[in-house]
Amino acid sequence: MSDPSRGLPANLRGAVDLSGLVRRASAPPPTQASGTDAVVIRTDDVGFGDLVERSRTVPVLVEFADERTGPTGVDEVVRSYGGRLVLAIADLAASEQLIQAFQVQQVPFLAAVIGGRPLPLFAGVMPEAELRDVLDQVLQLAEQQGITGVVEVDAEATGEPEPLPPLHQEAYDAIADGDYARAVRAYETAIAQNPRDDLAKAGLAQVRLLDRLQQADAEAVRRAAAEAPDDVAAQLAVADLDLSGGHAEDAIGRLLDVFAAAAPADRETLRARLLEFFEILGPEDPRVAAGRRRLAALLY
Image 1: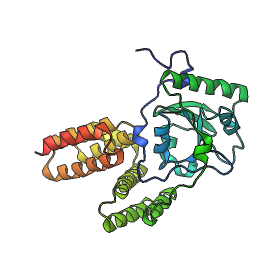
Image 2: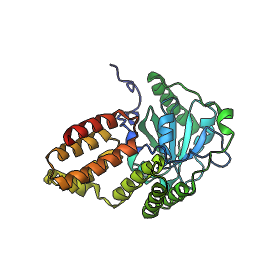
Image 3: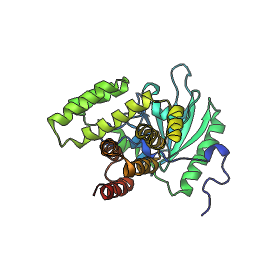
């Protein structure tokens, strides 16, 4: 099979799967930025999953910037493409996982997501002619992958998203503030009030993962796991990193491998973590179905 990125600049190569960042169900739809249309929207860690899915039909650009950088002009150029591109402006205060995933070292920084896969583009402000050249190459790569959709601006720009249930909104606000403990309490309360609230269950699993990642030292975690492959706590921590980095199959496989030889008490801990991962990915993900089958085989 030919490499669809052949002939493009080196910074358009080496994309990795971004599926693990999908924050499904519990997130409200991405909101429109003030003064923008449906082609230019806002995003963050929680809402980025919607854009990953959108990138399977139209290329999505992600801009990391703040008020100190001043206007970059990317939004106006993107609008001129008539819906063939979407620009998502990341809320830096609520996009820690996105910043890590795209390895953002400075702002402004522009990246793209095509078919669920991220592509770092460039840092700084680029002259319009050069920016258009980069965006044309993004469109070329998307076309080679069969991604040629167009956003219908008028259809998407109208209407307001439905409000979240109060406890879900409380959790979402807490996540935006970085208060994961408050978000956990809100989701737990929602589940206690309605044990069938699948959105709250997914949200709770996601927030617990974010909380663990916030406290983890990635280098130390991976070193500990390599030195002690039978250490359940270390393997759990590495699995969190794998999932957050988009390597869900590795994360699930790691925990199932440890589960096979684990003591009964450790097995319950591993099972609970696997179920959290399944909630985060969603029942439609084929890796979830495969993971559940293997877990059932190990249990019975």
